Length: 266
View 1 (cartoon, rainbow, N blue to C red):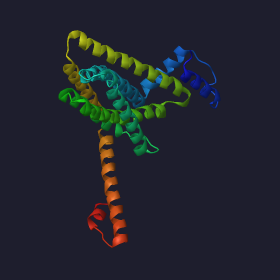
View 2 (cartoon, rainbow, N blue to C red):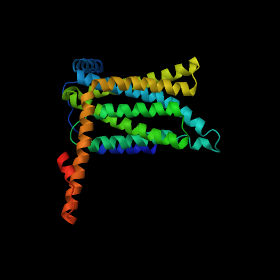
View 3 (cartoon, one colour):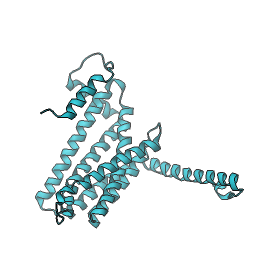
View 4 (cartoon, rainbow, N blue to C red):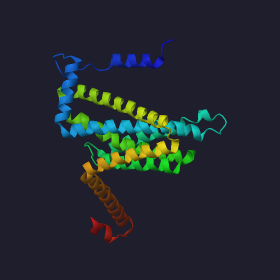
């Protein structure tokens, strides 16, 4: 029996607007990938974005394997607990969606580089707390939600940079190569998790070592983009002062009450 979702995708693809190919002349797949790799290597910003995405998906896969095992331990003593073991990964997925929406909302029509180190810091903190504290189900859901939000803040600008820096005629091949490297990173993370288990690491040790690798990646990210993180922090602080000043101004107009301090801060 055919999968209904496949039929829906087929119908949707049939009614999509047809657009001309970005490149008129056909190329071999090997030539396209070779050209994409050459372009990535000669553009430092594009190279760092692709590398950052690769490292993110590697760490996500590594942590994901351990989180799935940890979720099973949380519901081991609960009747029909296997039904609940999918809730922690779902919480992480919901957090990614929320973080992506926040990143798009605050970035507006530009790419906000400051979200990359900010998301990396949140990702590192939540992964460390998960390994050190080993919380209950509620605490795990909260940490995974925060980890997902941090991931969304991190990955959206990385993917936006790839699309922005890629030349028009090579954009498809560069995105395809980047996705391929992301999958390689996922496989690598799974292999590292399997190697830790084969060596004999316990679940707590695997979580801590995985978090340590995330922290190393975060340090590298913050060293690359310190000014962007500071700029984002200043923008948030300025926005709070502006909102406070506008609220005070509205209060003055309505009730005749006003504070001079917020205006002096502006």
